[in-house]
Image (cartoon, rainbow, N blue to C red; front, side):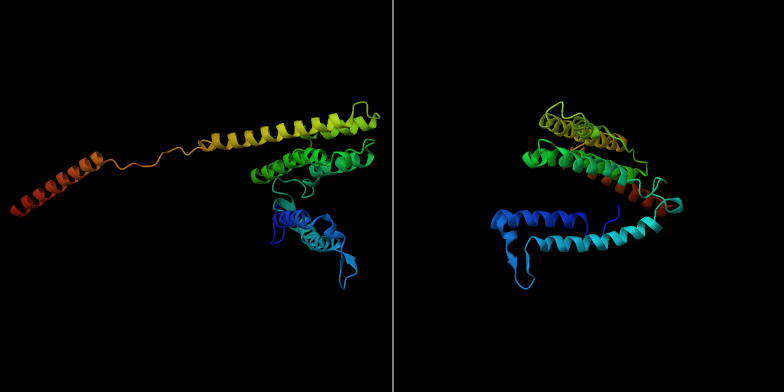
Length: 237
């Protein structure tokens, strides 16, 4: 949970820029030869990303070895600094294995559904990682969002008893509802603790009430009159 000047947000904007270039100039733009470099244009983002990843890996390796926020260099929850990588590995590794060993080639034939399905699972795990960091709590390795990838993996192990596309759609639906339910639960718990309403402004705009202003001015005048009267009496004495 440490971010630098070039990190996740910049990577997302770079991916958006690459897709915009492909949309405007066409995907074939990445196959053109670059002058003086003798390589295709698509290699340039790869080399730039590799350089940034290498520099970030050096920085993170230093943090992992020496700079844990907890006791004895551990995480804020007192666990190993490598422990957050385990839930993320349980998402990425099955996705790669399922895509490679699929007899129906679900990644190439249904790329959008595949990416959305595992994206929902990764989003749930990432949100749990952020909550665990903010609350300084240990993060559980297993989660109900991993049910879909587990079914896809077991289905391939038993020679695809169920059509993979059915389980892929189930993974997308299950992951979506699980992510929405978790986000709603977190928001409601925060609102309950802070005693605030979600997406609501608790107090309306203040309206100037002339009658109340007039009554307050009369009260102030009475007070000032009483004060001056007491002062005159004290002088007389």
